[in-house]
Image (cartoon, rainbow, N blue to C red):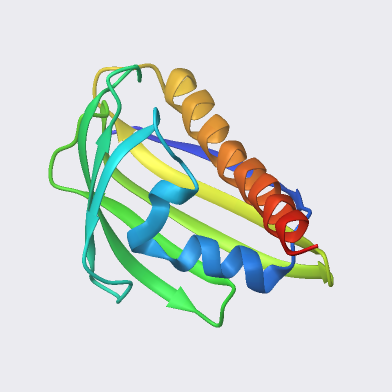
Length: 153
């Protein structure tokens, strides 16, 4: 069994508390990854052990359902989730950790690292896909933060 991994780390131009609220809002991940990426999210809470059911859009390379579980949340800076059961993705035993560190009042160092076992895809293909997804989460956080602040002005 070969374990593959991905990591995406960068400075996100939003306050740490804002990014934490967005990432730790487990049941509302669809606001960070809206259609056509995630078409539907079903999740009842943001508590440890919560399951969220994601339906990936038909325009995605791997459309279908993914079931994720919230594993760990610590000190508004560390968050872990995993994919449980079977999923539409060609991976198994996927787990991801997100760490946040305040750089300044408006900047956060953010990193998402993940590990999985490939089922039917190349490790490099999935690494690129996951890293692009993590960047999109960071980019959408920045874009939405700017929109919120512009609307309040």
